[in-house]
Image (cartoon, rainbow over all chains, first blue to last red; front, side, top):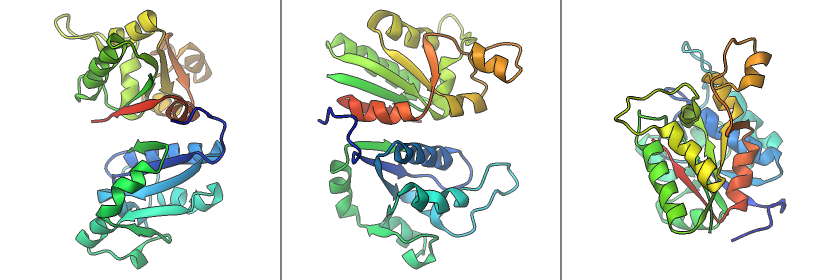
Length: 126
Length: 130
């Protein structure tokens, strides 16, 4: 285990498992990712299960008063969050292709999941 | 080992806070150090000063407080998640013009950066979510 908490290149994986509407999980998960990046940590996002719908274009505020998450997603590059993994199986199940999504992503097959979890020092699951 | 917990479930609504407490008590019973509990999402309600559960149910707020009193565990509440949900200490209550406060020591309002630090500086961060 790492004890050097000041290391700038610490690897944080934030897993987003909820869609953009119906709960605050996506927004609060993204907040955690942005804060980690603002503190100089290297952050990877994994959009998993229902979370892949966060990347479908046009996620606006809607009538329920929650802020839309699309503007936050568009800011990720400014925070140097550039590795966006998506659950390929979840895309397939929903009839989505990587080209339907708002941002360039890297598909992740189920067989790659365990290795991805293992290679990150901190995994936060939302 | 040095442990941190992340609690994201509200008290009494979901199992998450109950499980977190049982795990916390087991951690210290086994001689490990439980240094930090971080409350995020609906988990911030576990810090509600005014919680008044029926007497024949576990008092979750008191049990979290006991972790601090007995083992020095820091009880950190995300300030952004807390303010939205009405969890304010005296200072924040004054700042927002509110008559009462709903959170007090040993619970402390703090930023999300503290969650990231806890996750990276402890040997384990265990998450309890609904």
